[in-house]
Image (cartoon, rainbow, N blue to C red):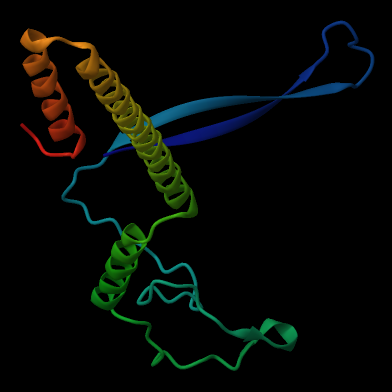
Length: 176
């Protein structure tokens, strides 16, 4: 371990231009001296003050009276919760906070679900319109086939009857 010491020398110099006046300039010269200490030498740490207690991890609490004398020093029996208790409490708080949803998260989920619901409603309306159009088309086809049945002669009359029966079968909702 290396320690440095600085030696200071003050010199008084007269101004060269004004030898007649007695103005002096103070200058400082610093000389560094490095000394090596081995690790085996014990370094003595002197106590800073009698008021400081290094046994606890907090500053001492006391009141100063007249002439800066310490009065009403509290007992050291007051100890806070153990580190294990504090860590357990903080872990529980963090897991609870993780489980809670923020307002922003709830709003985002609501918007996503609202958009999905609107899309499903739109698809249902399109399916309903298609279904109604299909029923209307089948009814028109049946009406046209029945109108043709009366005008057809014998050889096409069986085909028209078959088409009408197929149309009636499809319009009742059964699958072929």
